[in-house]
Image (cartoon, rainbow, N blue to C red; front, side, top):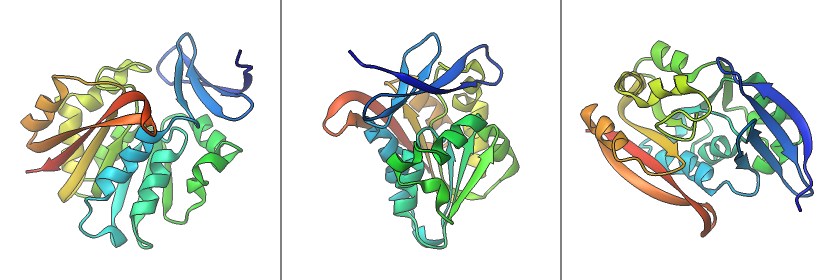
Length: 224
């Protein structure tokens, strides 16, 4: 039987739900109140891939500008930093301030403390705000703000996965930029939306833990 120690709780803005941070003997876990486990320090293969795969497509990684929507446990941010150069700038947008604080605490040891990297910028707020205010600015935008195209933790996240949100993301990209989305599972409709907005779409299946664990989806959308 797993023995949990709850270390923190944070309200999800605009909902009546909360995130809770737990620890057992070896790992940390973020859970949704009234739901299940959202992420852990033990299984983060697809979070790594979300940061790594789009950044590997960068034409000029040294001076790249990257936006990550959703800090989570810091693994996507860390993977992106590993792929870009010393003059790059990686902005992570996180809606919940407590999640940032958890990553600055002992949770950060598991991802290598990417928030301490000089190339990292932290924006506490809705990633949609940055998409709307930074036209033609980013070379990569990687979004992991919910469980996928249908909002699970926050129904307002649906906007990001609809045509208005995809259009806003497209406008925030520089020419030749790459847009990446994480999802807990496949979705037949979402890739069609991306193509309607002028993207070429590749769907990549990634395991949560090495060659084991759940199969998650990453959509890589390149401008045609």
